[in-house]
Length: 244
Ligand SMILES: NC(=O)c1ccc[n+]([C@@H]2O[C@H](COP(=O)([O-])OP(=O)(O)OC[C@H]3O[C@@H](n4cnc5c(N)ncnc54)[C@H](OP(=O)(O)O)[C@@H]3O)[C@@H](O)[C@H]2O)c1
Image (tube, rainbow, N blue to C red; front, side, top):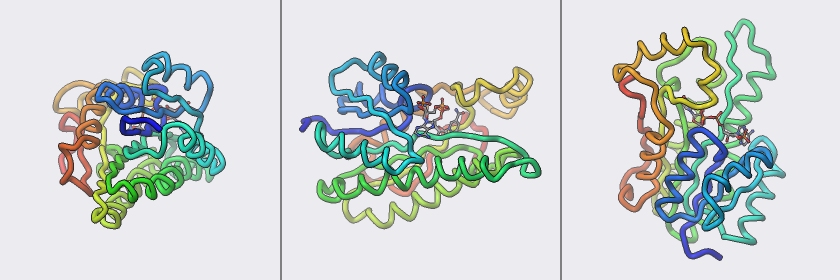
């Protein structure tokens, strides 16, 4: 079993998850990063090297895949004391056109996936009387966004779930917090047209798209000993796009 604290980051192959994994690794954690494919796992190890790093496959919609991930960690580094539920998907459509599959995929991956990954981490955290759970939401959870009813529902659910879990586990010194990014430059947002990006930037008082590293900084703080008295919070990181 590893000496360093184990941090599990879902969806660490690219975008915000890759930045979080790199930041936690730089802070001395043993990082277990997940991806849905072998190429994604390779991307994690080429970014972070092989010291205090494991790249493992995970599809959060598949219970068997979650079980295999935890079995593999148990045999190698042990259970995570820091869990960053970062993996997420979108399937945008106006509700009039949204299919049940698009609705179901976004809810299942983003919300039920988070349930599947979080529950098995709790026992080890309870035993250690230490834990940090950090869930990724989005500015749109509170702001709303046309064409993203499924995603907004999912992210709102994550925020409510996190507050409830925070209350359940606070007495065990386990904190549960949410980071809600604004508009961040990753594959998830790269699909937008230039016109859409310009329109989006006009709504950001800081006048620019955020960087994945700017999300990673906040996650790293919430994972640190310095954040020991923060729980049940949702931290907006959105350049002023929405104030609440
Ligand atoms: N980018 C933004 O502007 C923004 C804003 C607000 C919130 N967020 C949230 O921040 C998080 C990261 O976003 P991002 O922009 O970095 O996304 P991204 O670039 O699309 O990357 C998504 C990550 O999730 C993984 N993933 C996708 N489907 C998965 C599944 N079914 N099971 C397990 N892992 C899966 C991907 O793995 P593979 O590489 O293997 O596909 C990838 O590592 C998400 O929760 C997102 O909702 C993003």
